Length: 102
Image 1 (cartoon, rainbow, N blue to C red):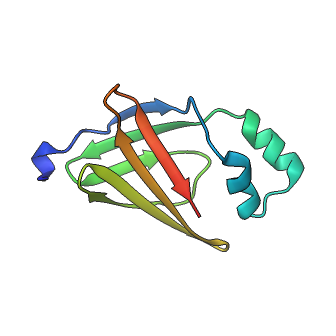
Image 2: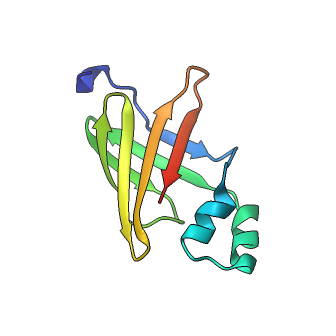
C-alpha cells in the first residue's frame, strides 16, 4: 500500500474499551492501588499525521517510535520492563483499534 493510499489517522481519539488492562499493568510492575486508579481514568490521544510523519500526544505514555505496516501503524517504546509494542488501525465502523503488548 503506498503512502497516498493510507488512511489518515489524524484526529482526537477517546478510549472507549480496554481489554486485559489489569494484566498489562501487572506485567509492568504496577501495584494494586495504582492499577485500580488507572482503570478509572479515561485516555485520549491526539494524532497529527503528515504523510509518514506523526505526532502522537498521550499524557500517559513514553516516547513512541512508529512505522507503517500495510494499513497498520505499529509502534514500540523501550521501558525498563521490556519493549511495549502497539498497533493502531481503523475498523470498518470508523473506530480506531489500539492494541498494546509487552
